[in-house]
Amino acid sequence: MQDDFAESLLGWFELHGRHDLPWQDDKSVYRVWLSEIMLQQTQVAAVIPYYQRFLNRFPTIQSLADASIDEVLQLWQGLGYYARARNLHCAAQIMRDQHDGKFPTSMEDTLNLPGVGRSTAGAILTFASDQSWPILDGNVKRVLARCYQVTGWYGQTTTMKQLWQLAETNTPDSKTDDYNQAVMDLGATVCLKSKPKCDQCPLTSNCLSFLHQTQDRFPEKKPRKLKPTKHTLMLLHRYQDSVLLYRRPPTGIWGGLWSLPEVDDIDEIADWQERCLMCQYPTLSISEKLIRHQFTHFSLDISVAEIELRALPKKISDNENIEFVEFNRLAEYGLPTPVRKILK
Ligand code: SF4
Picture 1: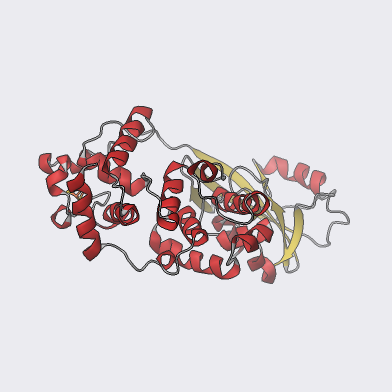
Picture 2: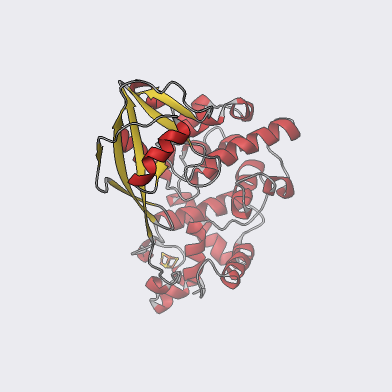
């Protein structure tokens, strides 16, 4: 253990760390788990209202396990990375069915829960069960990469191996919860991605990047690849005050959410209607690119074909994943953000 590294951080944490986050109050393993999953790839300020709403509706593991996936996704909508919500729901059911409704206490069982990787497991067991495990979330990676001038980017095995080794050596056996919170807080509030506030940092004497003024070179970036752009045409079938929605498959983009049906181009609209509605309707208009939505690995340009139905199709194929939904009931459905924008 690098005593001075941990000591400097712990001293700083007492004065400047975040001590009043909602999941630090009335701490339970369920609350900590929920917050850690929500905080993956999302900042604290964005998470707080979602966390509170979610906890009000699902105050226990049991209540989450017994809920429908639709209700879980509906509360999650807007937070993104929906696989997290599906994994939470599935993990709650595993706990209900295999762990007596309780969160596991061993690292091995925790790592077997869907959506829980090594860093998240370490954080949960440290914060909620007083155990001592290192963590390596995005903030911690950045602090360590700068302090030790770690070469390579996070997608490289050797780089990750080195970062985990550094995380292990620096994590103290006692006060691990404070230390883990401290290093996350330092990354989130001082060792910022751009323009780190080194003048406020307790680690200047440990930090090679500060010593050599190479803060902007570390962490090293992934070599840039141009992000591809994909196109889709969404079908907005309207009947009076209803719109046709379909539920997307459980895995993949927006998995399990309700959305507008999609085709690649205008020539496929009639075919889709024939297949799913058993009749054809004329298209009123097609917008040019209406919305560009950014995913991590590509951009999606969305156009919308508007189709007004004079009568409801006699038979909406036997597919239970297709529904006409009144506009004033849309709030009850989990919809991807761009689809919600289109429907507004
Ligand atoms: S000295 Fe600067 S670069 Fe180094 S850890 Fe602190 S804030 Fe980050």
